[in-house]
Image 1 (cartoon, helix red, strand yellow):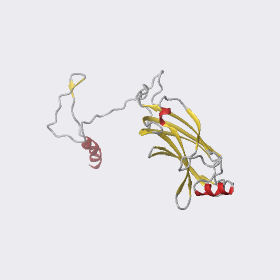
Image 2 (cartoon, rainbow, N blue to C red):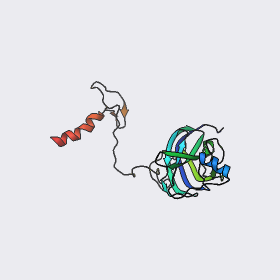
Image 3 (cartoon, helix red, strand yellow):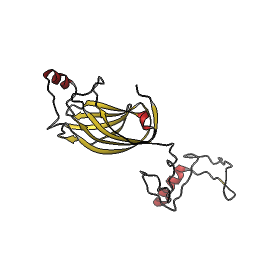
Image 4 (cartoon, rainbow, N blue to C red):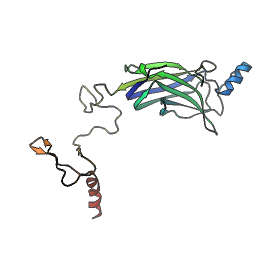
Length: 219
């Protein structure tokens, strides 16, 4: 059984393709009896998901008329703080009734903690943890960046460090940040917190500061 570890950081994941994907579920049982294999083709709708234990953290697009070699080639940038033993890749078929799990592949989470790129073909297993008919495999690439990385919280750009990637807003000059003790504080709340320049901290009221611009516009 894979070791359970804490993945706290960013998981970079790419799902490339599946090789020799055969129909799953009950169909495999009857196909083995008939010594035949059933491949996906016209009308099949396939997609893949990424889970950290029971947490769904990623999903590919839906492939219409998928074949036995579905190719997604999709990358994911996943912020995570999950305890997990495996990164689970599920192959699913979408139909009128609902999604049907064809099989799952497992990547031990502990192997990602060193921060190195893992580019691997993983076996796709059925509900009994046995290989699917045809020895289907999924090609994935993973790299985990931990919050313990010394560059994790470095947001100021310089010649040595270009800044934090994948942020929502680009770096700007002349910005101002107001620190709030709470959403609202009473009038007699005057903490003696010294600041630079022989000044003392003056508490602000978040809700009032948010409301005042709207009040000024309406008057």
